[in-house]
Length: 107
Image 1 (cartoon, rainbow, N blue to C red):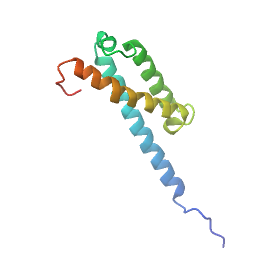
Image 2 (cartoon, helix red, strand yellow):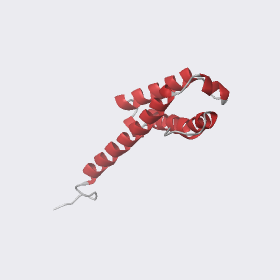
Image 3 (tube, one colour):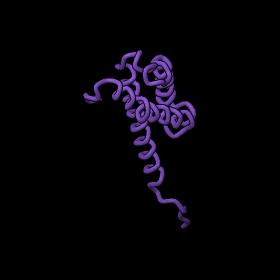
């Protein structure tokens, strides 16, 4: 009897990790897109970043490509670009927009 070098459950674990990464990626991208939609357009120019329409286009295209699984899904090239764009928005643009307003609120 010859046994494989990889455990029997390797494919199950790899699939589960891929699903979890995809869900987390989609949630982060969706939060960034929803936040961008709910903000005023003039605030983006006030903080010196791309206009609201550009951010909406970037985030929407990224989430669509991740949902469709183009290029390997969330762990592929387009999925990683999408998560990077969403994180740049959430960690750079969102605090600027929040500081521009009174700094209060959930978002």
